[in-house]
Structures are given as C-alpha cells and as structure tokens.
Length: 494
Image (cartoon, rainbow, N blue to C red; front, side):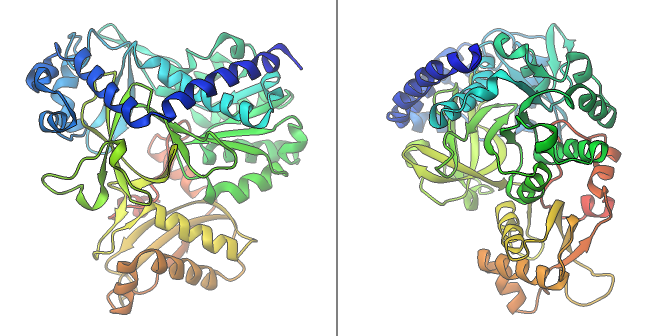
C-alpha cells in the first residue's frame, strides 16, 4: 500500500465522525445556519432590501425572502458581475461559475471564498465515506481520471470565471494531483472529440483505478477505447475499481456501461451543482444520497403540486416527509437567496436525511394534463430493460406528439438510441407503457378515456444524441440531454 491509501483510512474515520455529529442534529444545524447566513449578509444590498435585520426565525425568513430563479435575481447578479461589492454576499465572489440557461442565456453563479471549500470537500468526503465503509483505499495509489470541462478561466471585472468543473480542477488536493489525469493541457482542449482522443492517448497505458464523469460521456470514452483496442475496459485497465458519477440517473446507462467494463465494480453517486455541493452517496448499502446540511446551504423544500401557486408551501428540513416530490430551494454562503435550482427530490430516509433526485421542475410532459416527470419515465425504462435483458441503452428522451403525422390519437414519443435493440420492440414499448401507467394515474386515465394512445418508440440512428449535442455546441463536459420536455423543440432537432 502507498502513503495515500494508508493515510486515507484515519482521515476517513475523522471525516465520518464529524459528519455523524451534525447528522444527529440536522434540524438544529440547518436553523442555526439560516441565522448565520442572514447575519453575515445583513449589510449587503440584498439584505437591506429584504429587511434581514428583522429576520428572527424561519417564519420571518420566508416573509422576507421570496422564492426566485435566476431571472428574478438577475438585477442583483448583474451588479455583482459588474464588479460591485456587498450586493448578495459580503465582498466580491471568488469565482463565477458560468452555465447556460434555457431562458436566461449565460448564467453567472457566484462562488465565494466561504463556499468554495464545500464544493471541494463534497467530492473528497464522498470518496472518504467509501473508504471508511469498505476499507478499500488502494485505488488512491493509482491513476485517477476526471472527465470534465476545461479548467481555463477568464477574468470578468477582476473575478475568475469558468465552468464549475474547471474551477474545481484548480482545487484538487496536492496529494491527488500527482496521479490525476488527463494533463492540464489536454483538459483545456475545447473540442470534445479531439480532447477525448488525447485523453485516451494519455490514459490507455496507465494503471487507472478511478474514473469519474457523467455516464454518457464516460460511455463515449469507453467506446473509443474499445474501438482502438478491441478489449473490454477491465482488460485495458485491470486496476479500475471505482466509478464516480453525477448529473444524471445512472440506471438507464448501467447495463451498457458494465457490459463495456466487463465486470461489476463499485460506484459512488454525487450531486454537485454550481450553486453548491448538495449530496453524495455515503453508503454502498443504503438507498439514496446523503443531503449535506452542514455545507453552507440552508435548504427549503416546496411540494411539487404547490410550486406554481402564488404562495407555495415552503418547508425546512424538519418538516419534510418521505416519498413526496419536492422542488429544491437553496440559500447559500455565496449569496443565492430563495433560489430555486429547478431540481426535484424525494426523501428516502429521514435518519439520516437521504434523497433521490426525481427530475426537473420544468422537465415534464403535461400536454394533456398527465404531468409525467423524469423519475417516472426512467423507472418505466428501467422496468422494461429488466424484462428485456438483451437491451443496451445509449440515451433517450421523451416528447409529446400532439398532432401525429399519421393521424389518430396523440401519444408520447420516446426517441431512443440503442446499443443493442430489443428483440421485440413492440413488447418493449408495451412494457414501458404499462409501467408508466402504473406510476402515473393521470396518464393511465388519459389512455382509458381514449385521449391518448400508448406511447411509441422511434429508434434513432447511431450517434444521434452525440450529433445533436455537437450541433448545439454542448458535446461533452457536464452537458446532458433533458430526459423529457413538454414540446417538440428538442425532439424535432434530434
């Protein structure tokens, strides 16, 4: 064993012990944090505008701070981007994480000197929790790869600006940087396909033990290695033992990814966002991701059925229930207040608080009143794949077909790219449809009432999703195709 793997075990024990302290006082931890955040930002422009000095408890917090998205906060963020201090948070941000939004164009998410450490420590603690639980630390002695966006940044009015994954890349601990791949120069290549080939050049003969990235882009990496070598990934990287991923539900990709690898390996799911590192998988046995309640973010939760109401219910962590879909609202130590990130989650445990990501508040199909969400289509696809074990999935998205070109009743169209298609496509579609009807009573009612016909699958050509993402300038990195949408803007382009 090397020094990294030896030192990791006592460090992991220390981190887990500290984590367990706040886990046992989660509600108190969050409410204390709420008051601390308000006190630290009371002198800011936002704090003065929203009477932070009058906030004494959660009720007065809700009365002072509205739920808002980027558009609502944009007048304040524009002042921050212009170089002004003490607008949303004290002083100026350390970084801007640059992201693309569907309605806002480019978004600049502030990262402060108080928040950057939590972005870094979230990923670190996910690995250390795994080490503590399994005793496996040898992977730290080999090469680690993080498939991410470019670490290059520009300065915007004195503040470094770039992709979150690139910002985080600058803060990889020194004890890991010496065995991290790809090289900085390769990571800076903007064209994803050129970058991917260079990454393979740099990694193919190395003892890779940990590979991290969004599943569809890791799959593309694996496919190109297999095309070059003709071997399974386990034979190219015999030390590969841990896969770390985030950004999408892993289940639709699991079968093809493990088929490419050629063996079962451990995996860790993480839930990072530009707004904060939200959760990670703290156990190989327990369901869900541990919500990080001591990481500079005061969380609120809105039941999805209330979200679009004028005055939706807002709940703190002590008020949530199991199995309910909630929209996530964040108040952060970088100056985001009442900020709806657009994700929905369900709690699968309240001791400790563990969640699953169930979808996006704006990614749904309700063209006919069915309100089908991402979690439901992914569960339906997973069910069908279990029933048809020969199937290997590359990617899929779902859209309504309101006026079918062939006539007849409207339906949901599933645009699917298979690595291995089902032997009986009709039966596969029927299984998806049956499961979706079980999961969503409104969808079932619409079919029973002859308003919708059962879903139809459109099988796409190879590389359909890669070609689409390339056409949008979003190939690779942290980009992903929405799982479903309420119109055909994406479907028709694909």
